[in-house]
Figure 1: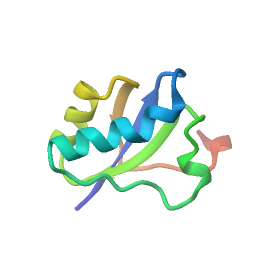
Figure 2 (figure 1 turned 135 degrees about the vertical axis):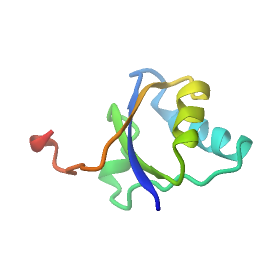
Figure 3 (figure 1 turned 90 degrees about the horizontal axis):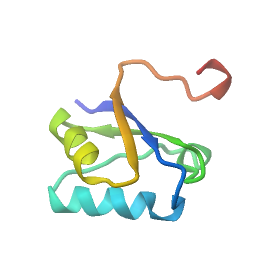
Length: 84
């Protein structure tokens, strides 16, 4: 079962966020599920919620993605920013 993770990004180079994630997932051969809503995938926002199958994948992202400041696991998320 996939688990949701919150990625906190550095403010710099938003155009490299998705290529950075994709390269790490290809290197370690795992799938990243991005949100369906286009607004939730906005590269200019500092947060992104993704789904991963295993915790080790979140660790790999935290270790290898240069633009990710932190990775937080949680069982509850709300897409509306006024509730965050």
